[in-house]
Structure formats: C-alpha cells, structure tokens
Image 1 (tube, rainbow, N blue to C red):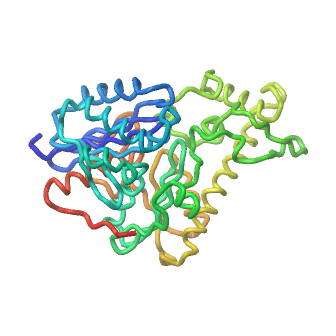
Image 2: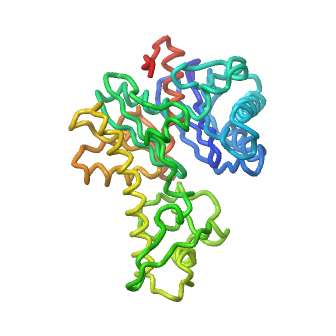
Image 3: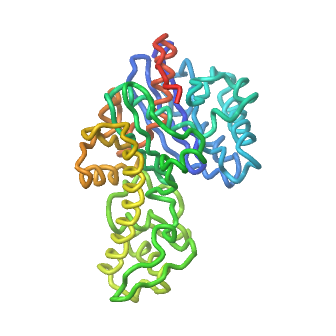
Length: 358
C-alpha cells in the first residue's frame, strides 16, 4: 500500500466509525460499529481491534476526530477527550496519531492532553472543510443517528458562526435530532389519532428508528443499536412501541394507522431540521442557488428538504474519491471518518488545507 495510506476514525458516543484510505487516495474500506460509551470503554477497545484486524495494511497515520467525550461516562469533556485519546494511543500500539482539532487543524496527542477543548466535537468541521474544497458554496447538512450538523461554507472556507456545542446549538448549526436514537417524545407533544389530538407520553418508549422503519428511509446498516425496549426491529415491533407513546397497544390500531403516526412524526422532525436550515440561510452568507450537501445515514431527509426549499441537492458521496461499498455502507454515511483520513493524507503529502479563522 505504500507509506501514504491513512486510517480515519470518528469516535462517537454510540458508534465507532472508520475509513481506510490507501496510498492512491482511494477510500478502500468504511466501517461502522456500535460503541455505547455510556457502558464503559470496553466497546471502544474491542471496536478498534476489530477494525484494525480488517485493515489490508498498516497505515502511515491514524487521524482521529471525536464526539464521544460527551458521554456521561466522563465527568466533563476535557476528561473525555483525554481518556479517548489515551485509549486510541494504547490501542494503536504507538502508531502515529493525529487528532483533529477544528480550526487548529491536526494536533499530536501531547498537545491535546495539554489543551483538550479544541478537539472536542470537531468532526463536523472536518467534513465541512472537505466540502468547501469541492464545491464553491453550499450548506453542509449531516443527519446522523443522534444529531444534525448544519454548516455553511463559501470560497473554500467554513462560515460557521459557532464552534463549541453551546455556540452551535445557539446558532442552529447543531440540532439534537437524528434518525435512529432520538426519543419520539421530543418530536411532538401531541399526535393526531382517530380524530383526537393525543398527548405524547414523556417516556422513551420509542425512538426515531421506529419512526423510519414504518415511514421508510432508514438504511439497514444504520440500525445497529438495540431498540428502546430491547425488543425486535420488525414493523410490528416498531408499531407496538409507537402505540405505547400514545397510551395504546399495537392492537388498538391497524398498521396503516401506525404508519400515519410515523409519517406525522417524520414530518415534524423534517420541519425541525428545515427550520434550522432556514435560520442559517437567513444570514445571507450563501447565494440562492447554493446546494444542500447531504451527508450521514439520514441524508434522505436532506434531499427532501432541498426539494421543498427549491434548492439543488448534492450527495456528499459525489465529492469523495473512488470508494468500495460494503453491505450498503459508504463514505457519505461516515463523512467525518472519511474526511479526517483524506485531510490527513493531504497534510502527509504536504498539501495543506486552508481553514477559515472562523
């Protein structure tokens, strides 16, 4: 493979994602494994080992980005960043490790241990930076299992208003909604059912994975974590969980009625994301013809939003080099892992990427 192969890692609180980019710059393998950090660090160590065993050759550099420092396993985010960095170092047996730190670019582990804050939840910045070097302008929208990132870019630079999670949430650049793990109760406080508006129970009886199993759109490779009740993931199981949100059992309605409930909830989630996109676009940073660039396992939602807004849609996968698909999983599903690998390879080849000062 040569000396310029790079492995990209995105260490999340619920999933571990990886991307192997070979010495020719091709995305050879993309990985996604369940990694519930709230249960401890063991799932992460096992996941790293599993992915490493599947690599074709040892990469020159391992490039890491993370959001898992937010897991309640850690007392605070600084501790989380330091802990995850330490696990990566230990698991990679002393291999060269670069940590992505947003506007600061790549840092070594020692620098991150001294000042963890820039490396915290910076994965969105890597993906948006890569998009900014492939398209003149656009709104990068990554809908994942848990969150949605909304990032404007123009003139080869990220034009984000916020950089920390707090700043990004205040600016509608980070919306805590995704197509797998989001509890249904946060999407709507009441749902129409048989001519009545029924209040939604404030319980985590069902998640958005149930919504999209019934409404359609959820890729099978995105549905890796246990359901809300630990039960099955079939259509009937999802209908039963959605019914419980309304104080019902599945037998209190037929499947068409539960699909209607799911469709209503999917529309509410789409509305939340579209509202945030409209807020970011209202700044006037982007032109009327700027596309929505969709990434993440929920980018089917971005495509729909672009159509309703009358804007072009561009799949993030179209910006990536040649890639190999495995069971449907592709680079656009794991955009941060792929882009930190590609950005690290550019640095390795002395082709620095300019990053806007903010």
